[in-house]
Length: 112
Length: 113
Image 1: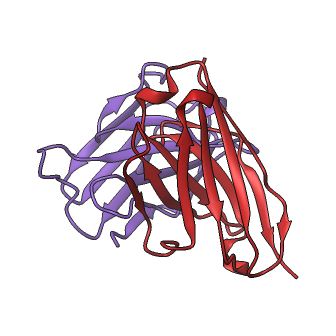
Image 2: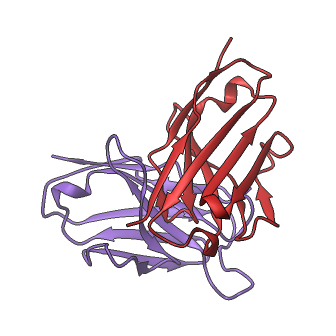
């Protein structure tokens, strides 16, 4: 299985500060289609996960543009330009290139 | 608005069986692949498997293959997860998802004697 490694495990930031989360995969996520199925989701406290970013850098329509994704092959990054209160929760990367799909262990964003 | 509502979670004994359901609304159910994902008490997420639009093709995680079966009824906009020979490690919150983009609220399954 593809192992997804996220760092840091937790982040404590003040509102308005930037955030950066790393996600590394144990093998390349570039598929035979030429697409890279690396995605990000956010699980707010007490809620089910919600979609954020797909195929590395594409934001879903409802996601604020303070979020951005980048990377290739095995190294990926989620950035928040300025953290807001509604951004707290656990961020997970997951890959959909190789079966079985696998998730990172999560990065918990807390507010200072 | 896309909504996914799971049901059927309960306490089940090791070796027992359970069937989860997920009713979808707010979109054309038959147009989308569907997945099941679970979240253990330790909070990690594990993909269980997926089913194609007409139910003719499924893919499963090796960890659960041959014990769990995913099916769907497009006429009822309903997704199912049949769980058999359950183990204590199957204790988790089970989520129905539309290709891991939209998620239901989850349903708790506890395997214990």
